[in-house]
Image 1 (cartoon, rainbow, N blue to C red):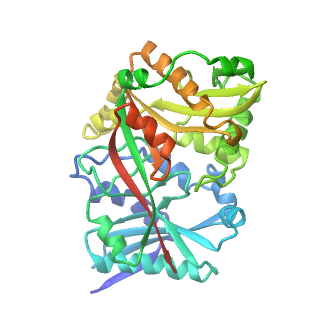
Image 2 (image 1 turned 45 degrees about the vertical axis):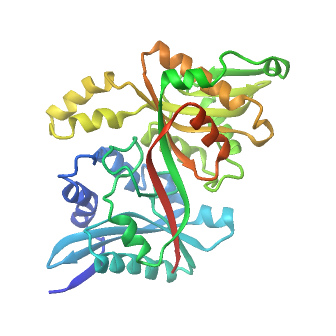
Length: 369
């Protein structure tokens, strides 16, 4: 018997691929199992428009017939076109603490990408850089925010002993609503009145054309960011539903003369509820989930961005002020934010001023294929 890596071809193998983390991490107290329907939606070409411009290959590592690891290799043609780089990605890496297993999986993904003329592998992104991303490198005892991965401490060594190099770190932070309230001004500034800037709640269900307004503002505000890759209207809407980006009352848009110039996307952090019910099982866990969701007191900021010409003019703070006001009305006590890049000094300064603490750092790696 020996180690082998196979490509996923059958429904049985796909099911094993999806369920392997549940088996490997079942005794890990900080692991929060994702909702299986969300996972299936991510993998289903009929429900995830990402696969209209991307291809994915999934692999399983086997030892004596038992699964010991998994990985996926992805070629996103939108990314290649936008960046003009022959870059592919890896994602969904889950493995036992064995360097041989990691090498076999990484090499299988590299070989598949190389056959498609890809020169570099970036990630992990599961499946795209707009979804779960990064390798957790600290705070392993804390459950992650919704939409962020969890992995054991040994993953960093598996990557860095497999010729991967750091690209950047993304961090999650948390602070109390009271501390954030004290660190930002309330109300609209005189400059905002002068330039006819308004802050309003997003309402994608009732306002005609709201999805497209949101998408355009979101895409324009990402200009210049490391992860700026345009998405179609269908893809953006599908991703927003999977990641639960837009919560009525907690997501806001800034407009200047009716044109979007900034956006804040936030929602209750459902991972708090999922972590509480993870051991109850179906159906009792899901019934308890409905009750636990009502008790969530943490807001998760998924995204806060301002278009380039309006940055450093108080628009981001005004969006945060709207969220703080609504959060207080709805009895939230904590605000957490994800994906803060280690070079984003403006965001880091604001978080420091609000007394925020890091609750997880996620590293993005790359290597030649």
